[in-house]
Image 1 (cartoon, rainbow, N blue to C red):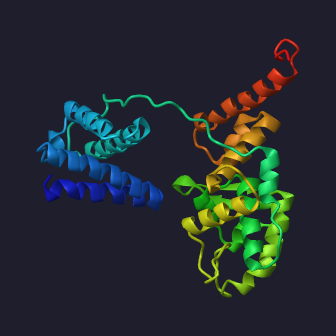
Image 2: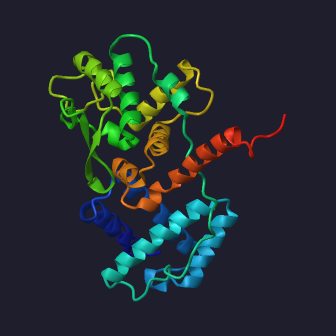
Image 3: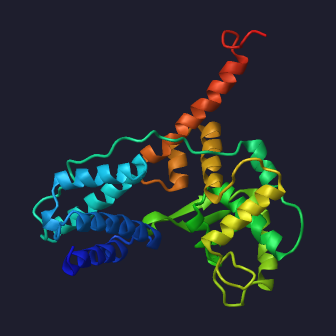
Length: 300
């Protein structure tokens, strides 16, 4: 495609960043998917966005599938391209959205993994003293206590924790704020970290969780600490930061059966995103049924 056509991708990303106020990571994913589509247009001699039609979009989906991309990734690329063409329509750069009638093959929906309550308790039973141990204990307790996303955790500042009200103010997707309860054990861990934090953070540092250099922790740093503690605590499955959020949602739903409440706590804009946890809840109930119901128990 010519440079003028590719400039529209930059304009669209700026629109996402400044008008829709999407996160830098989301903008990065949009750019990656649109650049993949632009590269396909180059391969097929499509020089302008107005030259894209439904047939070429279907060919793009088919080509990426043959190259080994999953159905989920193809859906994401088509979604990004569809949103991009809506923007081009709004700007009157094209006359139609060629992606509106194209759908990728449906992918099999995977249920979120989670740690059961016993294994989560073992994961969080961190022993030891020192600033780094206090910090890690507070991070992991808060991830599980409040069901935070990784980006939400590392974005927290000191002032976001209200220990008197036992709440945390979180900035989620789309820069939307929500206030989430913090459990007693997480508050205790945060209190210990508050006392240890000056040994690692500068006096004017605002980040709640910092590295041993005094800087705000990165995504990778938190992931590395989670992996480290999972190994130390003898957890025999893969553990990653988002697993704490899945476990929080599953355990809350199993206890309360309040789907709307869990939706609010997680900060989901659409309840269909939260409904995936109802399948997990059903699995839990089905296991209890199989073990206890007289007509369901297998004969020895």
